[in-house]
Length: 304
Image (cartoon, rainbow, N blue to C red; front, side, top):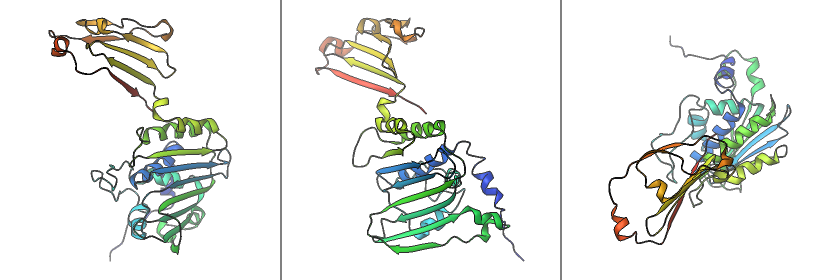
């Protein structure tokens, strides 16, 4: 006689809430799933989430899921149905994890509704509801059936996940971490393949703006460099407030050996940085010119 390994419903809590320490991490995982589905836009709506019973909606315009993808991918925890090295239709490499973050997000509320419209099946959508209260009255997880309903629709492809009746509120710090985590997911250079995320929250309008302002405005540090036609270079480093931390011109950059920040601004409030620069003789462009008018560039450094 053969048997299968089964799990008690309490394992869902251990795999979800206990392995993902902050609720915002689970929501970010849903946004990553939207990115992997080649969405151009993903909206995260927080409704009355500062109190018990609130609602989180994650909506995207990605490729959606067929019933087979729901069964073999979305509902399977611990295994990704995507090859991490295989690019998507838009040429993206998958960034989503193996479902534990998604489980943590779904467990934020007592009820979850999934509505998805696959790109390959125009005019059709699939709907599934998860009521976590049903799992409290069964000995094993497999005893709760999950019905997937197919119905007609006139909407375009995409996916919507609604998590309602939140068990715990999302505090300001949770929402701020969520906002800052959404920024690096967006493509700072707009194109027909770019991805962007939006945060909608009546309780934290300023954090909405934090996401909207984008990657460049929220960079912790910026290094701006310039090279003129005579190959004279200059560089300026600034913090996130625009305060100049140090700057150097071609005379500073042309010195050999180790030196300290040559022109550190007094308002930076930090000690000079140390750099090492070696120079092996005269460079060709110093003798013949560069052939361009001026080169400028900026490096943005950010984190979450």
